[in-house]
Length: 293
View (cartoon, rainbow, N blue to C red):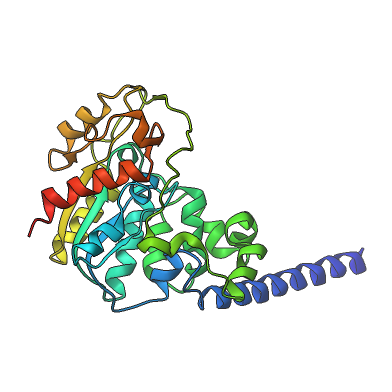
């Protein structure tokens, strides 16, 4: 029995040592990453200067044509992340400030994502390689239910989110394989003739009266003298519960409602996402309303 227990103890110690070593190796790889994704790009950069930074979910990523801002002489990057929530947008902005980014304007897509103050697991996982290295990231995550296992169990986060930060993504990061996420100044155009679901039901969606991460973003901008522009972006006409946007406006009167600026189905790739043509019409309106010269 003693030999068996000793064997188990040795196996456990060996497992812990291997986990620590693997954790160190994976993290070291991500600390060299600059061209795989938006989070890695921000974490491993410093002293950037932008006239406009765009934050939000896919409805930011697909709707704000960053090159159109550039054509107006505005240095711009679209940091919208498909599937992301305000949890991730707030943390990304915190990292930018920590890295001495100089930002004149932040445009935040704030509409459907106001209904949640939870993290988006698939996107938030991209911050986890830096969990031990960044106090800002640690503090942002420490109130989450799964924080203890992510922080105190070595290599656990890489196993749990293998599809996002596991061996495949670590390998691509190691060989510096560039992804398309940073193309077009972060804007991701959707194909004009590829149609998704052109009906949507958001009847049960309710904006939170106080979304802590929206308030964080607003406060960060105020503290750092950044002009804060919060907007709601278009949805197709076949949306049930479209009064959601009116509810948002009542709770957050400072948010500009552009939900009905683009309405025809031909400008949408799916009910919640405009195609490139629609995005260009929408972006032209934003430029006209906020960046007239």
